[in-house]
Length: 164
Image 1 (cartoon, one colour):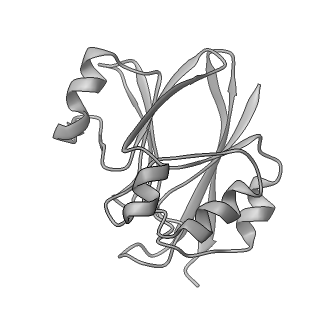
Image 2: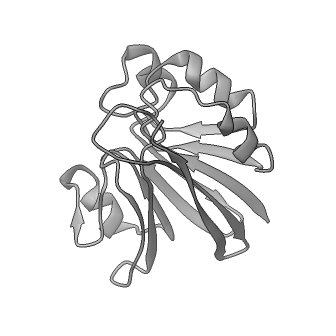
């Protein structure tokens, strides 16, 4: 069993509550638009950190973090990218990989819209943690936490950080 803290679209914004909400997690995953190396290092200082770069991330972050990250946790195949779309409207740049070898968990950011949706066609859970930073049109900053236990994704929590 592994507990995951998930965020996206921080755009270099640090919130001390990241430590509070992620200290009980085993890993932190970031779905892109990290915004700064400093922020990535701060998150990595809390727990083991996995991330993809997003469209606003510059050269240093693009070197450290891939555009697409695929790995297995417990018995769940995970695929993370920044611009991924959602069930029924996947982004063209990820569609082929999703359909040729569907993961059990697909995570994307970019839209700043929090979403948890099962795709029955791919038999895949899709998560978008919304945006944890202040840049963008979103009204409420959000994070997610969840547990992967064997083949199961469970105990999904949405955490609202407010609009300050």
